[in-house]
Length: 259
Ligand code: ADP
Image 1 (cartoon, rainbow, N blue to C red):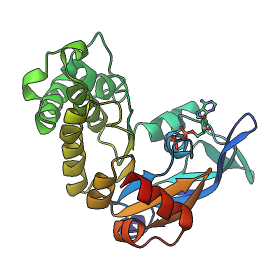
Image 2: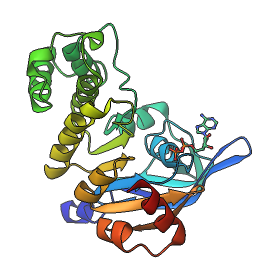
Image 3: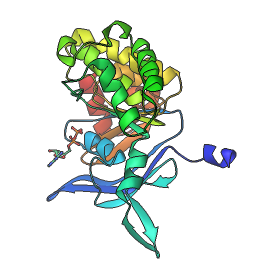
Image 4: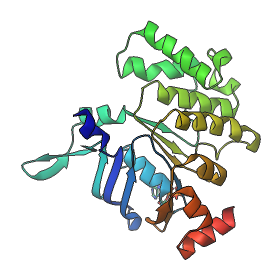
């Protein structure tokens, strides 16, 4: 069983389709992430990157195709050979194993950093408060915010808020972390501290999907880079290939513009 599990991709989508009205935003996307891999998703604005990431956490319902997280069908299950929507409880359970870091932090404004971090493990996982508080202190220390446990979000810089958001996601002990342009709402001088935490997580072996405009991060930290344009994956490969030796003209133009 353990050996078998190792061969299952952490994320696999098959012919993923998502529409908003008549706008086809994901047009048959096959996307894969292996255990322990860091995948950077890059591409022009409007190409579907964020939507794909949101689909992987069931923040968006898909219109076609399939998503498997760690081998399990997300959002649907088979019954008598037909696909039907999965129960709320099953979907919630799968979602609780996936950390999502938003562009705009999304902290609870009326809770301290510590209270933000302990909320889900207590409310969702029903873990004992003492244990979760200790975990939260450790996680805040890990993201360099040991001193800020009792601060409210409005007293923290954007970079600090985003690091609290990362600690909050980690408190659920996720098997997969999704980052949606986690640094693009930050002042330039605060970007590095958040990328530093993300880099550390990557080095520790966390499985990560990172939608980003930070090409330096994608080149240095990602194991695999996916270039999206017009609702599809146009090209993918190791960073050296995408940044130095891409095969597709659209990729070449994009990389030429942003690096
Ligand atoms: P990217 O992350 O690559 O910039 P997005 O996934 O944000 O691209 O957007 C892809 C397309 O989907 C865009 O045309 C965008 O306008 C559209 N879109 C995204 N979210 C919504 C929504 N909630 N309702 C309608 N259209 C949306």
